[in-house]
Image 1: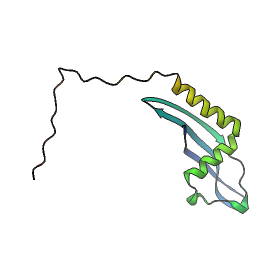
Image 2: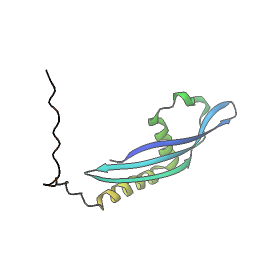
Image 3: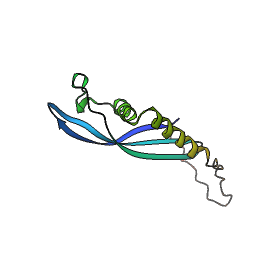
Image 4: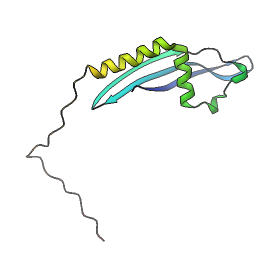
Length: 113
């Protein structure tokens, strides 16, 4: 399942509201069986409702991600998730690494009791 993250924000004062998040840089990624996919984007966020405004110091990642998804819209969010899945699915699953028989063996020291 794709993981969403907000990696950077832009803030400005809007009327009486201070440090309003107006733009977000976001990332969508997935890691599965040694395969990796990563997309990033930037979105201007919807204007805040003064009655439900969250001060910057109290914003949590989950809330910021929900604002990004709301600004993108359901169809775009679905498209990002589908594209990440396609990138992952189009990659072959890496074969496990095989230890070289001539490689030096490193032994861990046995702790003294």
